[in-house]
Length: 333
Image (cartoon, rainbow, N blue to C red; front, side, top):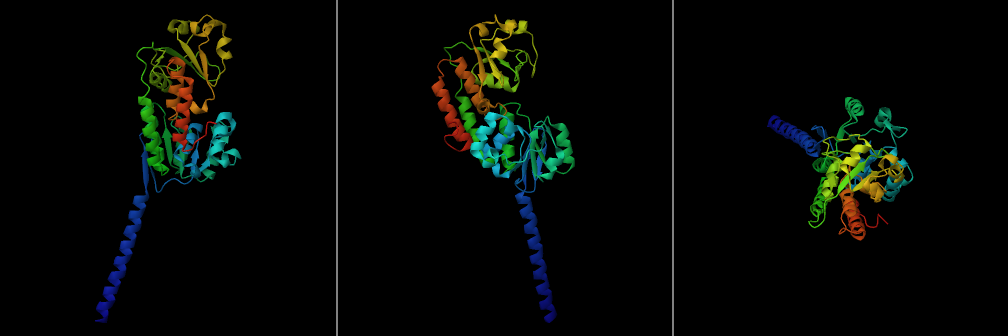
């Protein structure tokens, strides 16, 4: 009888141990988070990311939109160097204001893999063009989630994917729902002529533009306007004579100055220049087209193109948008 009791007890103990092991395994599986990045690669983490290094300012911005800033342990140095980005994010995080977050970069440009590894991240966020760093980090066993920000669909999907890995998927879906609803409101007025917009690249590169199918082209079309550049190219370089041929109604600059256009003698006779229809997206932070703020980029173009969309309405829409995107009121004051 005693032997039988001992056997029963041993069986119960073994059963308990097995059950505990199964529960732990199940808990591990249940705590996994997954998301497919811009490469089509499924990124799998054992748990929600708690130590995140971000290698591009636009992606830092989206981390704050999601309310996941407490996970940040490293950011690109440009966040501190670009005045309007630093000024805004400083309102959201004292670590930014005091420049306490590490910047694993060389002179604000190239990324320092050794410094990134030293921050012991469980996730790195970067653009898919950053191939060398991506390969190095993944070879070292560090998960990398990549972005393309190629168009509206990719921006939405990548934000939701990031949200899943940061434990903020519901928040990401809420943002996508809001931005999608705002986009649907931007139909071109039927009684107004559709204007042609020429977009000039940053740092005074006036003869470089964005062609059909590009992210900027998408934002221009969403505004109700048309891209003056008919070329199916991401970033064509053109001559002044080509711009005269396209004859845009207005020119939009990004991180450039009006003088970059007005001082070009070869464009002095262009109607858009003569009519002072040259505008600068300034400050640039509220209109970053690589994030869901491509919607605000489109709204700003809409204001410049259509008289029925007034500055007062634009300002009101931006105030509401920033409150929705960042979860706080009064951020644009």
